Length: 320
Ligand code: CP
Image (cartoon, rainbow, N blue to C red; front, side, top):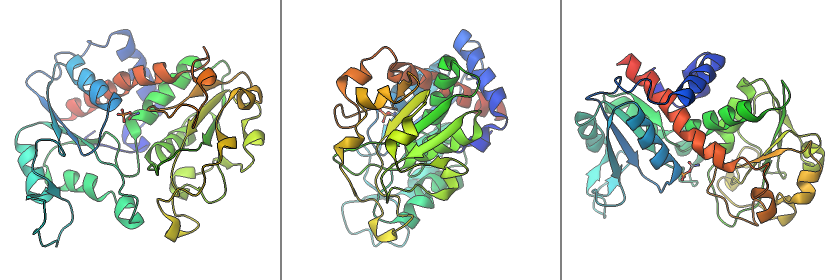
């Protein structure tokens, strides 16, 4: 595997889950695999979990790690071709990327959506430039439209905590003060569609996700109806994906606090586990008592980021 951004890149998902279990039982099993290999992690945006868990994963595999925060200490990078660079950006990504490739064996990229130009974001312009020009295997540490390491960790967490063979998993939109990308809900939907679960998405009108990610999921606009009988509740905010109205792309259409997941919402479920990728705005997305409840899985999800990243890096190392 040279590139990782979508669920299909892993091939057989059951096999990938077995590898995750193997790594969890002995996370240093492949410590020789990454000897004298260097991972470069490139961050265009802030991160806590991705930064720490991916670095730890590389260390599990015996790799060296370089972390580059593009916006702190590096030259400001122009990302669009054809721009007259007479502003504050000193270097173009088209030179910077192959230079980065000179110093490493694998590159991880974290680059959020701009949320102003839907075509630019959904073309994955920044990530694909790394694929095209770095000469190295590249994996997504959250891109404009996907967050596969998070979705893989979420799936591992569901597998570990499910109490029925085929659980009902509900992803619910929840309010947030700022416009957020669709990367997490897109990937969560994609991965749940590939998993052995009954998957339901609920959100206010106007927040329809791209059909490519919704797939065969049930979309239910009545949040209570959607949550009834749920075994897992995955809360997440996202801004307008611009599917039904392109002009609204990236906008906050609603801050309706009746969508905040509280104890009443959880009472409609089958004693569901609560999930969120973090960071989370308490009492916007979820109330204190729900996130602090023993049924909350937010910390195990974060812990499994190390496992999902170790599996992905192992696969890439085995291919180079
Ligand atoms: N969930 C997640 O990707 O967290 P960070 O943004 O802190 O990396």
